[in-house]
Each structure stands twice: as structure tokens, then as C-alpha cells.
Length: 575
Image (tube, helix red, strand yellow):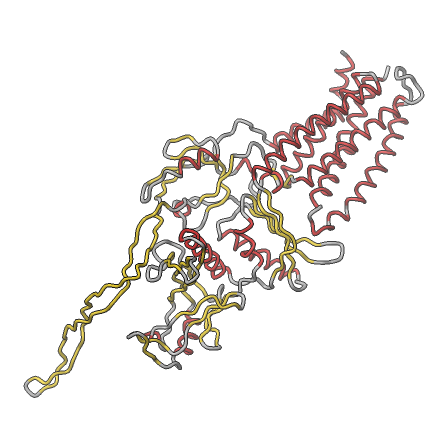
């Protein structure tokens, strides 16, 4: 009994226990937490208008806002959330209660515009002033003139309810950040077309982050990477996103230009002061809607309003002032069109009304289209194209073009399977190692400390990962396995050195033997660190998780847990 008392009074053992307790606090495990955590909030959505905001990138998982009920219906997981929101009707009030406060949202109708091929005639009454001679004097008289016009018949109908604009996932049960391999998402490795300075690289990363956040994606990591050859890369990791959603958004430079003739009148970014993203001034164009093309597919046209700076408007006025007025289909336009280019590719051209000749108008309308094999697919693609174009107009172009070098996509279901398999393999490995140690030494007071030390090293390593916000992916798990393996090897060295020269009963000169063991351990530790440093920069940063986890784990073991293990063995075996 006195041995155990001396053991828990040992300073090295006390340090390990205190640090382990702090690590558990940092991890903050809570397997009973319920609800869904908010991953992102789309701009101008019902949730955004109600005041809901997406979490910051560096926010600890357990600190993220969780939805716990909707309209007094308890939300336990993502399936409950989907079940509740799928029944929403348009123009209804929704009360969402979160772990922080309550919000009142108004659901928006999803409108479909149908264009019929037939036309109808309408009578338009126009007010016209004419000069007449009355009693010898010329006066202006107001006359109402009837004018019959033919217009396309349109039908506008509500086909559902717009999304609330929330991206959610099952509430995290600890502060451990899961990488894409464990939670699902997309990872894209990009290379700039030319070498960038530190300032340009910073601007590039900030621009990408802004694009992805505006697009409604907030659980995002964008960082610079490189390899041993000096090549520059940008690594983008987006949790819970699909590859099709982000590839074009982050790989294209996004250089938007509006030209009249050969002159650029405004560009996306600094020339744009406002981009409409709400339903009242953006969406499917009611004048064109969706229609079948000659090959049997469908095409839908979108439109949205923008405002530009006065300088850009003056430049546009200077260019349009030189143009002639022409008449087409009883409508008057300027002789040149406003042509829209995205990354030097023409995406649309718009007629300019004659009334804008020489006029410095800061408000104009942008349009484009999307296609698909069905009406629904064409409408979805059209709105997605509109969303990307709006994002680029807000953020402006990136400093260089980007080339996709590698893309990895992991489904959330596969990520959960990875996590379960990793836990099973870990416990099986610990059991096997413990049995082997016991078979080797035939002493429970040696095998048990080895097993406990393995668990403590993992807890300390996960605690450090929680504090620094490091994502745990498959590479990091491989680093944890390496750490546990080297830890067991070091503990065997300590035991063997302690028992050398005896039959495991009487042990002499403990300090000299432990010192000799740690001389070997430090040599192994320094070898591991030196071997891992190049991996921090190799493979465009994809091996960084493995290298960093291995270095941290080895350091925690050498300086904290293994001295405590040596003290434990000394206390339990020395007579």
C-alpha cells in the first residue's frame, strides 16, 4: 500500500495526472449532447435576415451554435432537422431555438415562371403632349393615345419553399476537430499559374475565403502549401460540401468584365457597390423563364440587379454617348450591346435601351442562363450559375489563374465508417500489446503501467490537438499510431534496462540504468523529429498532419509520460 502512496506523491506522476486532466478539459467530451450544429449561413437567406450567422473558422466545435428545437419540436440530429424543415410552407413564421438564443424566420416561396408560346394583345394608354393653335395662340395639349402591343403570356406559380439557408450537421460531442477523412467533404489542391509574392498569396487566400463565405460555405480551411521543390500550392478543405459546388468557384480567376464595343466599362469587384441576391430583384427572368431548345433540352434565363460606382457609370455614359440609336421590333436600342465576359469567355450580351445614351446610370441588370435535360435541372443550374456570378461580382477577380492538381471527395457516411474502424483497431491494438507485455514479463505491475501510459499519451496528444485546433484526419491517425508504437518501444527499453542484471526482483543503481534508457530514448526521439521535419513541407502539405502529430506525440511522451512511467516502474519494482 505504501508503494501506491509513494507513487501518487511522485512529482513526475503528479505532473502527468494534472496535464491529463487539463487535456480532458480541452477535449470537453460530452457524448450526450443533442441537436445540430450550424456549419454555415447563406447570405440573404431567411436565416441570415433573421440574424443568424455562420461560425468563425477558429471556433471550437463545442462552442458552435446548436439548433435544439424548431417550432417547439425537439431536434436531436440531422435527420430530425431534415424531417421538420421539409414540411415548411411558404410565407410562414418559423421559430428556431438554439443553444444561444431564439430566432424568428419567415419562409420564402420558391417561384417558378412559365412562359407560354402564345401571345395576347394589351392596350397601353400613353400620355402625349401635342401643340395646337387655339384662338391664334400655340398651346401644348395633353392627349391620351391608345397603343396595342403584343406580349408573351406568363404564368408565375409557387412550387415550394426556399431553403432556410442553413447548413447543419450532427452536434459535435467533443472539441476534437475532424478532418475531411472523418467527417466528409472535399479537398482541392490548386497551383497558381505563376510564382506569387507573400503579399499576393495573402490576397489570393483572402479572396478565396471571401468567395466561399459569401457562397454560404463557412466550415472552410484555405492555406498555403508547398513541396521540397519550391512549388507553390493552395490547399482548400471544405467540410460538408460537394465537389461540383466549389471546383469552379475556387479554380477560376473570376475576372468579370462588361464591354461595349472594345471598351471595358466596368469590372467585378471594386466597380460594383451592390449585388442583389434577394428574390424581389434576382432569380429566373420572368420575361424569358424556361423553355425547350431545338435539341429537346431545357434552358432557363436568370437576371439580377447590380449597382456600380459613379466613376464606372460615368465611363459607361461616355461610351454610350458616342453610339447611334437603332430600332428593332418597334423598340429603340443603342447600336452596340453590353457584352459580359467571365475569365475572357463571353457569357451574355444585353441590348442597351436608347434612354441610357450618355446617361450615367449606376443601376443595371445582369442576366445569363443555365441548361439541363429537364426543366427542374435547367432551373437549378441557372440559379447556381447566377449564384456564382453574383459571388464573383462581389469579390472581384483573383490575382492569378489557378490550376486544379488534385481533388479528394469523401462522403460523410464513409467518414463515420473511418472513425468507427479507427477506434476498433485502436482498442484491439492496445489489448494485443498488453497481452504481449504480460507474456514477456509475467508481471501485472509492468503490463498495467504500460497500458495506462498508452492511454495517457493519446489523451495528452488529443488535448494538444484540441487546444491548437488541429484537424484529425487519416494522416493524423497514422501519426497517433506511430506515437503509441514508439511509446511502447521506449517503455520496454526502460523496463529492460531497469531489470538488467537481475531476475526482476532486486534492482540496484536505478538512476544510472534509467539514465542509460533515456539516452537511447532521446536518440530515437531526435531521429523521429529529424525524419518528420521534411514531411511538414513534402507532398504539398498533405503529409503535414502525419508529421505534426508524430512530432507532438513523441515530444509529449519523451518529456511528460515516459519520465512518469520510469518513476512508476522504479516505485513498483524496487525493493
